[in-house]
Amino acid sequence: GHLPRPLIVGGDDNNDIPLLKVGDIKIAMEGAPDALLSLADIIAKPSHEFGIIAALKKAIGGSI
Image (tube, rainbow, N blue to C red; front, side):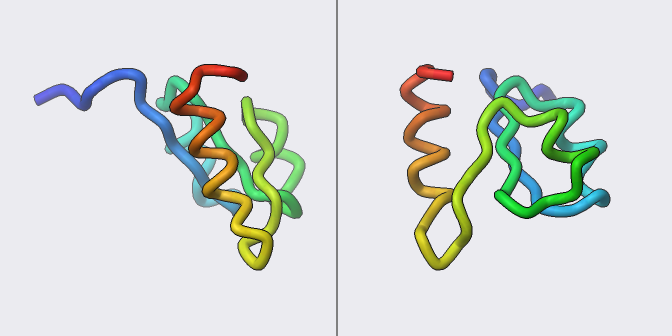
């Protein structure tokens, strides 16, 4: 089966590169390697700042 679109994906390290390559809206965590950051549509603040929450709201709202 197919995944619903748009597909929002996120990651924080090089092992997440294949995932970001298939996503429609790509989130990388601040401080991730440059190779991952270069693929991202949204850079999320660190987890202690609940950055992923703001990034997901931005992705869902379509304001990228």
